[in-house]
Amino acid sequence: MSYEVIKKQFPALLIGVVVGAGLFLLGQSSTPADRPNAAEIGFAQDMSVHHQQAIEMSSLVRERTDNQDIRAFAFDIINTQANQRGMMLGWLDLWQQPLTAPGKPMAWMADSMTMNAQMNDSFTPGAYMPGMATTDEMDQLASLEGIAAEKLFLELMIRHHKGGVMMAAGVIERSDNETVTRLAQTMVNGQQAEMDYMNELLRTY
Amino acid sequence: MISLSALLFVGGTWWSSTAQQSAFEQEIVGLTSTIVTERSHVQTEVDYKDAPPVGGNHAPQWLACNGSIYDEPVVDENAVHSLEHGAVWITYKPDLSNEQIEALKSKVKGYSFISPYPEQESPVMLTAWGVQLSVDSVDDERVDQFLAKFRQGPQTPEPGATCNAIPGGM
Image 1: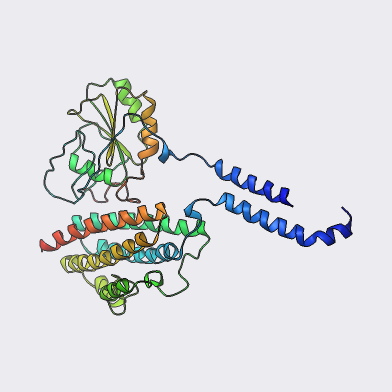
Image 2 (image 1 turned 30 degrees about the vertical axis):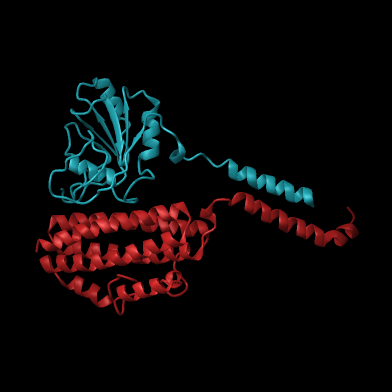
């Protein structure tokens, strides 16, 4: 091909390469995991933050009590939620999305009026996301010892799980990605079971 | 130009179809599945219908299950909690030959544990949450298939939960 021919056919060549590259990507990314929607991205970003606080609360209470039931339960939460954060951050990495949400928290669930109402109910003034403890509440937990710390931990974690269950249920409604909905469903079931256990523990004081 | 697009398209399709088949998709002949509906923490004994149990309510404390070898029978209520965390529980009848027991123990790595189970019917059984397999010998190829599929398998109720021992003991 002479230079003149290449120059003349350049637009066609360019279109061919762009279309070809597009089809290549299409052929490659045929699973839903590669095409996240806004709710899946928002859930992974926000739930990672939500889980992080559960880990922090559990770490705090482990240092503030000798009660082995509470310490074992907190150890369980620390490991499970830290690993689940890793799963969600891994999705974001594969999706090439920011690990931290650039916008407002919970924007991905703001599309439903009912959800808005529910979210407002479970938002503590000053808290970042549904069920999360405020900075003051975290400081209070860090200032207590023994039974007082255990009770506040249980109360805060029950509320935390309630918010977590709502967020997980929210993504299940908005996603058909099996990887996302499977993990979210285990959060709904698991955190519900843990709330029952924590209520049981609270009744023993 | 069309041929270039076609070439790239075919290449892309070939690329995605060569992805490795997932162990999750492997069918295991003779596997029994149970839908487990209860999974609360209880401080009491639980009446399990399977031996060994495949799930259900359980003790708040889980057994260490990170390649853990128990030479005596373990408490069902603790073992079921380990199943909830994604472990495979290998069990054998105590009269199994030493050679077979040692071969089974050599397969116990992360997210699995082994113990004798006198009340079970088959010589060797593998259990994960909601699924179970009976085999006559460690040489059965399904032993490795089961381990590949169900250590932290897709049916795990608590993905990410730990198999490490609880610090400070149970």
